[in-house]
Structure formats: structure tokens, C-alpha cells
Length: 189
Image (tube, rainbow, N blue to C red; front, top):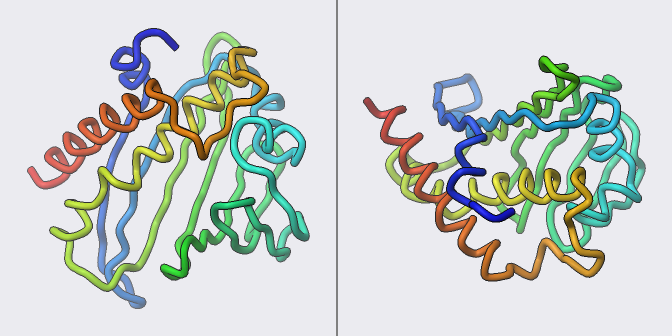
């Protein structure tokens, strides 16, 4: 990827919060069209061999109701798996409680695929604290989308690891953080 700023503009970002019976839920949402068919994207996000190539190695009981673990990252339970359009997981990271991750795929014009990702958590702090921290965690999803895009294009180096942020990946995180700050500004207005 040569122009990070231009590429990041291909992602639509939103934030949201609402009161629920369980507490205040807060959500980050990303949407991007990838130049690959739905079945290929589905396989890239659910096939353990392919997922390990661009995201993280995964292990566990990889079926609805089963527990999964991403090597060096999150773990949780597979809640829904409707091939090839919807995947829902619980997401447990670093002992910080459980959140919900929902991914949907839908065909776009020209044979591509729109990937919608929604990450929702009930958090024990106010909206201001949450909004201030978005730039620290939400760019991780931009980074994941970037790696998926590079993988699908055959541009991801064999030895590239999501845990080792190259200068280009660090720049992507920084610029994505600014994009998330703008999403927060729009949400507040």
C-alpha cells in the first residue's frame, strides 16, 4: 500500500452508544468494499490456514458454541456462523471482559464484497473516557482490514506478522486514530 491516507478513506467508520438493560453499550463500526468475491472473503476469515496468514493463528473448537483462541491476541466463543454472510463472536482480550464482534459480508457491484464489522462492549466508564480511548484500540481493526486487503491482493510478505508493526503499519495506526477522532466528533455533534 503506497498511499495510506487515500487507502484509509476507503473505510467508513462510525461510533455509537446506547443504554441497554445490561448497561451502556458502546460500538465501533467499520465498513469497506474489498475487490474479491464473498466466498473468497468468507474463506479468508474462517479458514484457519488463511486466517493465520493475514490475521492470527487460531485454535479451538471452531464451530457455533465452540471456544476459539487467536494466538497472542483474543479468545472467546463462536456465537453464529452463517456461511457465507455472518459471523458473530464474543471477544475477550487481556482480561478486560467480554465484548461482541459481528462481521457481515454482502456482494457489491462488480463482484466485490462489502465487509461490515461491528465491535460492541458494555464498559464500566463514561462516554468521554471511551471516546478518548478509541484511537488506541479501533485502529487495530483498520490494521486488520489493511492486512486482509494486502493478503487478498497477494501483497503481504510471507514473514509479515500482525504483532510487528512496520513503520508503514505504525503510520496507518496513527492516521487511522485521526480518522476515528473524526468519527467521534461526528457522533458527538
